[in-house]
Length: 337
Ligand code: NDP
Image (cartoon, rainbow, N blue to C red; front, side):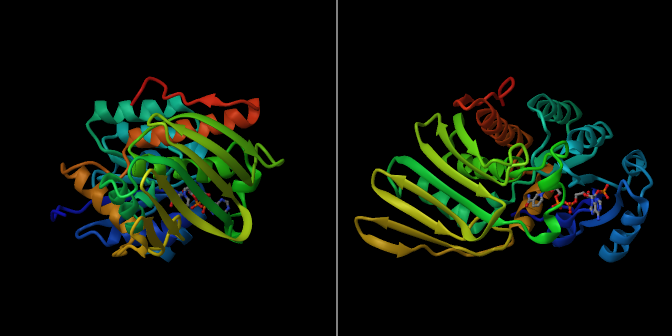
């Protein structure tokens, strides 16, 4: 990848994901650093900034966005705030890397994409799994025809929330809690990326805790004809994660690949037998930040664009609608991508 000028970042959100992964990923980019941050709670912001060595805590989003030194903003607040904060940042001329889901409604997500186009700034969605060498390997194998024509896919995102993340995800519907907003969008994006195809229909069921569901099982129908089965949980300690792609000439099985760590294995089974694929692991968030930085400096596109975030949100919302209606739901792209 080309050597590009780094970015000065402003963080919106004193979040776990920023502290554990994204700040380091920002700092791994040559010339990039975190210049400032904002939290809705001044004291929490001060503590977070001290812990993460961030030089300045703004008293408001407006103040952060008025800072001419800030080139780009990373938004990792709870989900109901993403759209309004991203729109404010875009209108202030900042590039925006926004956590998934981009918004709680398709109209809001579309307006973010449109505002970024009008403002000529880059909007990316942090679908970090595209940054996994394992997922990239699966995509390349599919593109090369290793499985022939893909027919079916399976995604297992069978996890237990760590104790420190059991707050709003399990308690606050208005904040976008529940496994659908958390994991279904990642599954949809990962399969869209691997299959280069759009989800057109979803049939889903959730556990009895809906709308703060802890488990969801869904069937996704892609415009290519592929049928995918996904299972997402917050409450299974020893399930694990995996992606399987079944095609006319082969099957790809990938284990431990829907994680935040550069781990996991990819195996191809075809008429030559079963063999492990060579995967050169790299940091998922570092890869995403590299792509975003390049895009903001005029080279290429983010790993997942705003449009990709709209598409994954559309699948998430269709899955939630299907749970509520008890029927299959067509995926609405709200005006197209
Ligand atoms: P956290 O719960 O850690 O943080 C979310 C917000 O909660 C913070 O912005 C903060 O608000 C507030 N908050 C933090 N600590 C406290 C506290 N002690 N008491 C009250 N409020 C608090 O969320 P996550 O980091 O898990 O997720 C943030 C976003 O990132 C979500 O949109 C999620 O979907 C996404 N995410 C994405 C991942 C990925 O790999 N792409 C992985 C994990 C999450 P304030 O900023 O106002 O202080």
